[in-house]
Structures are given as structure tokens and as C-alpha cells.
Image (cartoon, rainbow over all chains, first blue to last red):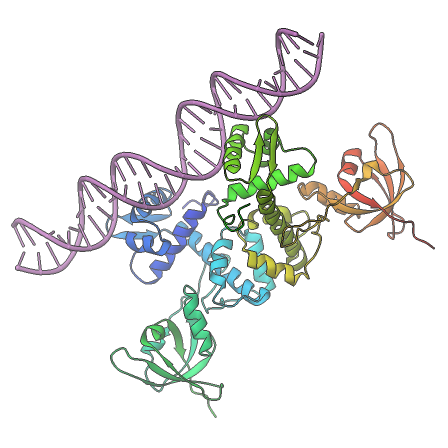
Amino acid sequence: MSEVSNQQVLTRSIEDYLKAIYELEQDGSPAQTSAIAEALAVAAPSVSGMVKRLSEAGLLQHVPYRGVQLTEDGKQAALRMVRRHRIVETYLTTKLGYDWDSVHEEAERLEHAVSDELIQRMAMALGNPNYDPHGAPIPTKDGSVETVEYMSLADLPVGEVAELRMVSDKDPERLRFVASLGLKPGVSFEVLGRQPFRGPTMIGISGAQGKEQVIGYELAESLLCVAIEKEVG
Amino acid sequence: MSEVSNQQVLTRSIEDYLKAIYELEQDGSPAQTSAIAEALAVAAPSVSGMVKRLSEAGLLQHVPYRGVQLTEDGKQAALRMVRRHRIVETYLTTKLGYDWDSVHEEAERLEHAVSDELIQRMAMALGNPNYDPHGAPIPTKDGSVETVEYMSLADLPVGEVAELRMVSDKDPERLRFVASLGLKPGVSFEVLGRQPFRGPTMIGISGAQGKEQVIGYELAESLLCVAIEKEVG
DNA sequence: GTCGAATTTTAGTCAAGCAGAATTCTGGCA
DNA sequence: TGCCAGAATTCTGCTTGACTAAAATTCGAC
């Protein structure tokens, strides 16, 4: 383990690759070349080339035709980017009035430009938050993240009372729509019903005059929740 | 004049060149190749190559062996970068507790990454300031800047009462030293004396218990001031 | 007015990244 | 067991932006 030498030779492109690979690994299995290519909107041969370089740099392990897996060094570098991204998103939303659907793009550029010091100052100004505006956990400075084990709204049994915890920040359209339903992380609701054959889920949002909403299957899959105890009284 | 087509094909490198050229032009004459090379810490031939491209793109005019001059398009693009830089500096200083000697480096990276919208929001959060922490005027959104006509402290006649208006943000060391003397834009003082042969200037800072300071010639040259009416009473 | 030093430009390379074409590998299925 | 479709890889070439070396030009000194 190189304890001293690992920093700072990361180009913008490398940072993007590491972050994308990290996020693909979160879905379980090793990240495939084609999946990385799609995530970064580049051609597969470009990925092959970069993977070779990153592998030689010791940031990931590559099993040809099988996919790649970040090494500890690679994972730390990726988490540093994730932390930057999420802190920037939180800062822009909290301090500069951005909507949660428009911060992703801005953060995507800023995460490469901000210094560790600026991130630290933003985090401090925010009171060292643990979650970004979409509910995603913010890695700490020393590179640890809360492992989140959420259940998608599509999998919550009917009758359950739950709280929305997290929505992917990737698609602004979806975020705008989710917000228009009165949903955001922290909002709780009851699952009132669900139609079969990947049909929509009906929920009643707590507080908001028992407002009912119908949510299509695909959208429901992207809303990550935790079941909560029903309010006593 | 291309009224529609001019935006957004600017690489980071091009942005740096335009800004550097703009700043060199502020010192009067057209910017020379070698001066640009020095400002950007690249080799002269690199500048020649870029100048050719920028000239073909209509961003500047090039008279071989004589220097370059920004076109209106080029000047607007440069001013956009200057505005970004100065607003970012002001924001970091005012809202995130940066010292005026450390913001330049951070702003140098951020100016390429921030969107027009973010700059607008930062400016609004700051109350649309007219000057950055070093006293440099911030160009407006539509690309106009106040033309500043300051006199260096080294040129102020003895006996004059003046106000410090601007200090270059390029050298953190100098900024730290200037601050340690109790000087920053807005501070007024009287020129008490000056030694000949490019010798030091003695000043008495107003307010601060008439504190006297001795300022070497080279430093005095970089402190830009305006004479003010002596206080009446 | 000419010579030489300094500056600028041209020419030729190089490395990083990306894409397209051609090739090779994998795994499923008969 | 052998073949085929799809995926991954290698090879080649393009673009950007930098560099060194060498040629060209300018300007100041005499």
C-alpha cells in the first residue's frame, strides 16, 4: 500500500472514470466496459484504453472480458469525488437557492475544480451534513460512507408506512416530477395500494392533508425508502 | 459581427489566453508573445500557435512580430472570465472566510467551471458588488467595466492624503504583507515623506492611532490609490 | 547604414484522449 | 462438441495543446 505517493496525478477524465466505476459497483457486480462507456457517454474502446492506464496505476483491477473493480486506492479517490459532488450539491441548494433538479450538472463540473480546503469550508458552513439534497449519504473526509440499505417504493408492501429517503440525482425531469408530487427525502407516507403487473402504487402522504398520489412502477423503483413505525397516537 | 454564433466553444486553455491577453492590454500597448508566454508559464511557440488559432476564430488580431489585440468578441469573452474570477474571489472571501491572499488560486480554477447562472447567483448573494476584495472592478454581466485611473503610492506627492484602492491579487506573499501593515482597499492615509533614488515612502494611516508605516519603492508601485480631499474639520 | 542580439515564427514531435474498423474472446445453444 | 451473436480489445488515426530546435524578423548600438 503506497501511503504517501497516491495523490494528485488524477486528470479530470480519470476522476470521472473512477466515480462512474464506483457508482456502477454499488449495484453489486464488477463494472463492465460497456456499462462504463454508457455512463460516461464515450465509446467502448476509450474505456478499454483508460482501464488499462488505471490498472497500471494501481487504481483498479481488470479481469479481461469480465469487468473492473476498484482497488482500495481507487475507491478512496472515487469517494473523494463523491464527497465533493454531494457537498457541492448540498451547498448550492442550501446556500444559493438551486433547485434539487438543477444542481447535478453544476456539481458535475465543480467537483473537479474545488480544492479540499473549499470542500471543507463548504461542509463547515453547512454544519457537516450527512446527506445531500437527494438523500444520498456524503462520504466523510477520511473516506468512509454509510452503507445504505433502502427498499424501493415498488417493493414496499401495501399498508406499510414509510419514509422517502433517497432519489437518484441523475435525471432532472424525474426530480422535478417527484417534487411536484410533494415528495422529497424525509417525507413519510402510507402505501395505500398497488396494481399488479408492474402497475402503479398509490400512496397517502402524511401531513399534507392526507394527499393521495399515484406513482408508476418505474418511478416507484427509483424512490428509496425505509419502513417506519406507525405513529403512536 | 457574428451576433449569434460566438458562444461556448472556448476551451479552458483559450479562456486562460484571453484573460491573460486582456490583462496585458490593460497596461497600454498590444500584448507581446513573450509577455503572454510569461503570464501563462508556457513557451513562446505555444503562444504563437494559440494566437494563430484565436486569430482565425476572430477573437483577436495579430500583427506578426508586433503583438495581438483582442477583437470585440475576444474582449467580451475575456471580460466574462474576469467577471467570473472576481466574483468568485469576492464570494469566497465574504461568504466562506477565505483570506484575500489565498483566493486567487482557488478562483483561477473555479472560473473555468462555474456556469453563468452560478455567477449570477453568487453576485446576487453578495448584493452585486462593484469591486473584488483586492479593489479590482468587477465587469458587469453585459461586459462593461469601470475604467480605473489610479495613481501608485510611489507617485503620490508628499503631503497628499489618499485612499488605497487596489492591490494586485497575483502574489499572496505581498498581499499578506500589505495586510500586516494595516492596509487594504478603502484605508486612507497621508504621505509623510519619501526617500530619493527609488527609496521607501513613509505614510501615516488614518484612524489607526496615526500609525506610521514605511513602504519600499517596489511595493509602493503596486499600491494603487486616489488622492482625496483632506477631511474638513 | 549595417551588424548582432533578442524576439518571434515555423517546423517537427509528443502525449493525452477519443472514435471507427477490424479482430478476438466469451458464453449460450443445438 | 461446435458454432454464432454480442461484447471487449487492439490497431489506426484524429484533435488539442504543449515542447525543442531552427529559421526569420525586428530593433538597438555603433
